[in-house]
Amino acid sequence: MPVPSPSHAVTQSLKSPHGRLLDLRQPQVMGILNLTPDSFYPGSRLSPADETALLHRAEAMLRAGAAALDVGGYSSRPGAADIAPTEELRRVLPAIVAVRRAFPEAFISIDTFRASIAAAAVAAGADLVNDIGGGTLDADMLPTVARLRVPYCLMHLRGTPQIMRELTDYPDDLVLTILRFFRDQLEKLRQANGGHPPADVLLDPGFGFAKNAPQNFELLRRLPELAPLGHALLVGLSRKAMVHKFLGLSPDAALNGTTALHAWALRGGARLLRVHDVAEARQVVRLWEMGW
Image (cartoon, rainbow, N blue to C red; front, top):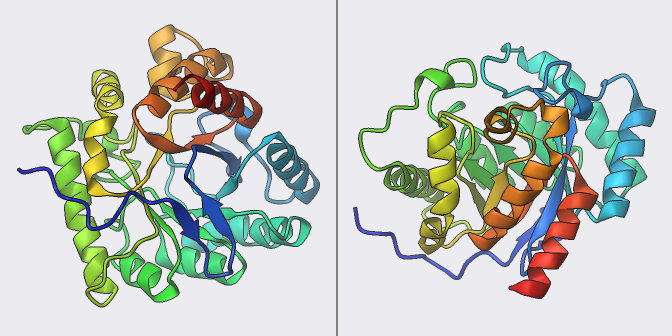
């Protein structure tokens, strides 16, 4: 398959329907706010009932240099339990309302693959929809994103979090498969947008999602091959199995390895790092900017 030509220059910024702007001319950091009891990294878990802890962590991340906060209520670790939309909404909506009230200028992302959750979150003040399904897990997601005119992160995934570990066989070249996926989903989003190319789209290659350890490292080496699509890259590597399992560690001991891979991702063109540890990721970005 020929490498697609970009329909416009690589994304430089994301403009929220609420007027807030996320500047991506230089790499930025997105802090993770997990409102789940079963996320793979226990240190990231927050209780939906504990607004004080939520706001304390949000404030700490913003002070440490987070340009965005990603609020999620559905654990997408391999084999995670499926939960009903009502439960996901119960977890995330009060959190978005609380963070928006406390930090009016913060750029807030909703981490969901469900269109109804995305719409409710944007109505409550979310600025970005971060969809691990890339529009494949809910047929209403792409039309909803187009209707709301909200920035969108489109991630590569095969299957669902419950079965993705069984879907790591790629008969064709891994990066070529991902390029085709992005091409097809971007075209569906364009059609949902009345035939007009949406400008404010991030692409996430989906490290750890239907990819084994060798495939994750191959993808990391080959990140620059995704650049011709014309959209900035969000990369999520923080404390994942490709770090802690490879090193024989637990997720809570995987910060140093995460930092090393963040530097690698920046060199490959990442513009937004999705992280648990904002201060350390910001240090990597600052050093990379000085040395690149």
